[in-house]
Image (spheres, helix red, strand yellow):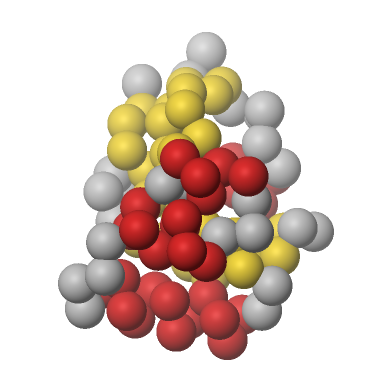
Length: 92
């Protein structure tokens, strides 16, 4: 069964997400941004979600994690929780 490891940042608006992505692409450290801005408890760990299997996350999140390139910052990704920036760290 496919599994992946990713980290993410959850913010309330698409505007916040786009702005944060721009800052990260300009050099802001993803983990630091997660600690400062993420509304998910994983923010304390730099947004690290650990390893998970396909189907464990909401469908919109799963689709990105199991299809987008490793190491890139993807988003905004809208779910019922808000808007996410996602970095896929590993996939097998």
